[in-house]
Length: 180
Image (cartoon, rainbow, N blue to C red; front, side):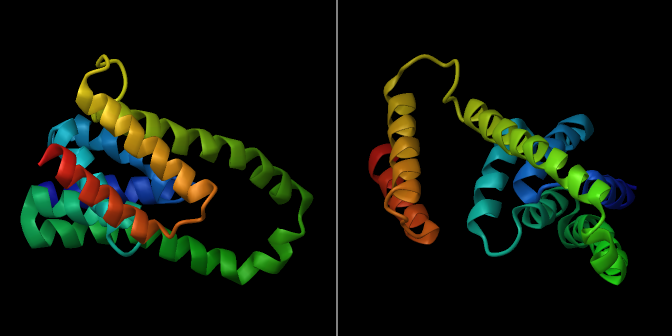
């Protein structure tokens, strides 16, 4: 029965979530919590690994959640649920894209969706920071180090255009040195 719940949950997420994997994270987190599939801390760890793994973070998250809940079959069910709606929608959109792209109502809808998707991504980042103790937990040494890593990462990405893979490796090494 959990296999069906995994498929159904991730199918709905895949069908109704817009803006890519990072915008899906709060939706996935809500469903994981609602189904009591794992703790918020465990989910945060999964998101960290899913973000560092090759491929889309939403699909990677589905794979990890499904595997955690029901093993290999759970991973397959969650992945199928997550990817099937996109596959079907992209096939349909591709058939009519030229006509839809020039429609002023479609263009207007996309302009409206962009800020909402940005808000979803920001919400996911804030929730992720909160679950890692970076918000509202006071200023102990661990929180200060986490903020320094965050700020350094942001500066490295925005101003120095450091490749994200290098950043992940350096942040992991810093984490090992500080927390290990």
